[in-house]
Image 1 (spheres, rainbow, N blue to C red):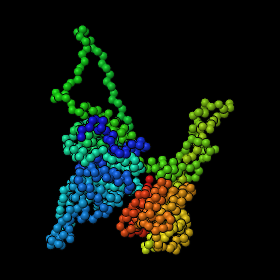
Image 2: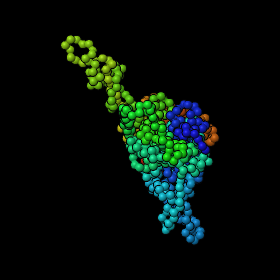
Image 3: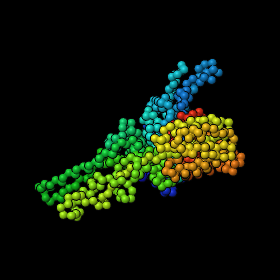
Image 4: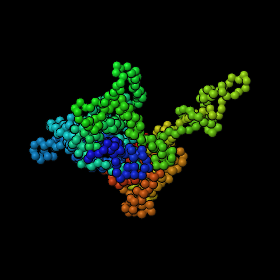
Length: 622
């Protein structure tokens, strides 16, 4: 369990992946931080609360959750969306009470997770009452129920993992829950090759937890943590406590009972990074005292004596990590670590890297619907840059004259002339920004007995999206698939009248050729991208393909072809959302959504407004 001093830093090893290929150091570092945050929360669940895990469903999130469950010391209870109070905090068990003829109570999910963890699914959409019940249990250490004439209280301590699948900044879990979670991490756009297995086992987590109470945090470290938090504009007192507890947990995980400056830096970086709102001005170094002039001594023969450092008052050796630490110097180290951005901008990692890939045309090149792009003409003016107007762009006269003015006196000009001498190097052109329109392509399953219902829902969603697509510069199209073919029922358009005519009578019934639909969607998306639009695929289906690319029946081959076609869409970087229309969430639909790297959303009770809202939310994803 014991580790050396260097191992106490953020470079805890993560095996089987992270950094093995050296393909993306930033992603590797983000994964190491994500793993470390989860491990620290398990070491000190009472002091750190848990983790907000912002990520879409996929293999990277699954690997983090599997590693977390493997290191957890107790049961890991999933909290379903909109869980009722009885299932959450416990209460009267009606069936057992009727059978026994007397009131019988049942424990809730929060009590069952005692000593382990809870995983809050779709935390950004959970009703406030669910978040409030979890927050109350975190604060009090008990799940309390006062309902149906029953009063009960079950002690419980657990780690909370809030799965945040929000696609827009404003789509986030409630503050009442976030305020009680120490760590905010993001897994967006971390490739699977960077997602290695965690470096800890449940035995190591247990050992660290057993020594946590013995870990000492010096006053100098506490002062530095407090000063750094205030300097970084971290709101509230609770994050300061989180940073101190994270430093202690980090020391315990390294097998030490004395927290060091590295522990404080790591704890502050993980906790303060996503919360920092400002970077303070550099701290000036302390003034050095002026040397005093030597005073003449009566006995000049004695050489000047130098003071030896005083030994500790207790006469013993200083323990490891107890050396004197300058709080000012440590504060600067903490601020520098946060400013370095290893975790400070973790929630912006996905957006930044997606923007870089958009320019390269790789995966994720489609960007988000409504993305803005730089242009030399048209659009809204956002600034100026140095450039030649003959190569495109509108000359900004004021900026050009301002650039030329300081050099005017040094440049030769005819005698008596007082005009400003302008050179081509002074030219500045306007930078304008134009909104990049989206092309929303619906893939609607028109097979089977429920085809007409799905078609009607899709028609309503198309009309709802077209109502404001002119302002957003979006177009909407519709592909239907049934029997042995997929057809472009509505080419991408902004015309509501044209859409209504095309959607008036659409046939339904027959087999489910999903592979053919994905292939046609890929062709349509390529054509839309060539027109300068951002394609977005919206699938309405239960995912149960039963017709292959050759038009032959057979579920096994049909699903294989469908997954292959979905993977091709993902490789092309086409953004997508899979709306599962099954009565219950379908494994087939989830597999296809994962293959096309799309957001999976169960929508058994679909209606045009809900479909429209889901599409708009996904289009806002960074």
